[in-house]
Length: 186
Image (tube, rainbow, N blue to C red; front, side, top):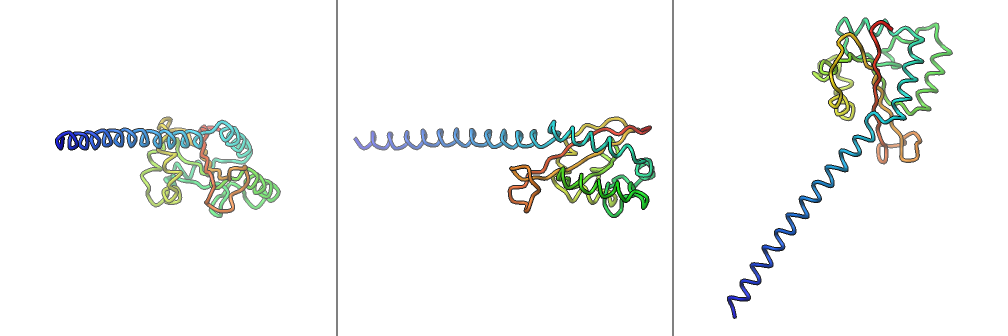
């Protein structure tokens, strides 16, 4: 009779172990699929692609040639609309204030003109330190394919809360990333 109780105990432990291992596997697969789904939603979302395209069309009215020339001369990452950006000169005061309003309305966090071949940006030299310090942007850029060496990318990071408003803190703040191609001869 004692052997039967020991056998039932060992059988129970084995069944419990198999069930636990199966549940852990299901949980790991579930969390991986949720992570990839969140990434899919936040990278190149259709609405954000449209917004990025129209921001590019707006920026096309200004000469991006200065920023393109700086990239070609080795300053790989060109921030747009920051203290170091030269896209708005002193003669574009009204356009600058319009762009500030657009920036706030679209909840743009950062905007860069970079080479189309993103591997040069991801080397994280001193020129690309602003991008390399942003883990979300680096993760997004790693999903992009390299390609045309004679083109550029306009990359925009957006941030908003679940209701579509500007983030008041990083808690509950969702970051979206998108890019459009900027031809060298535009």
